[in-house]
Image 1 (cartoon, rainbow, N blue to C red):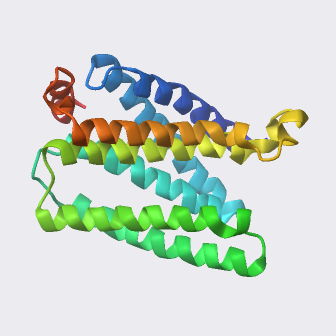
Image 2: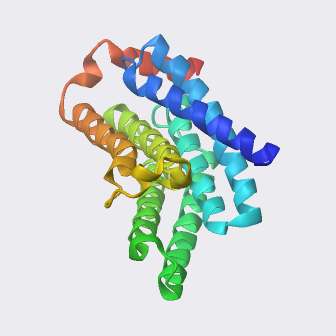
Length: 231
């Protein structure tokens, strides 16, 4: 363990704690905004150092860190931006996501061809497809000149959830060697995949609430609008 890896692991572990706090808090509340901002800073630190470490050891790790940065930053900027507003940031986000998707598909193909891809390369293709969809969503925002209302909240939700799921996944199944042997011997390793899948499930539930109910008109909604001006 080098000082860099210890720093990266510490930031990643703390990001998990504050990520759970942000998910558990009432959406739009002071605790939600505070824990969310701390989570944002910790994720920037963990993912940024992950990119640096990955460039030295494993390019796939570097790409995963870069994509995590993209998801978290665009989620945060969504509530920073006013409704129906776009700029150079959205264009840069689209270019980043498009490049990430191309790189993801390339490395997924190379991993399958060489026989080194995890689970036959399925996770890599899923990963690349998510980024491709994110790039399409960014292009849609540019064409529509911004988002507002439910779509704005939903954009923040799914990107922040997926960024958090990436962090959770990098710790649990991603760091399998640190877990006790009896857990590592479980087939399938559902116990280690449960946490990131739980975050994805939370994302689906919240997207359904925001898009298909009147939640946007409840007391929590002004908190999210306020966050766009004070975050």
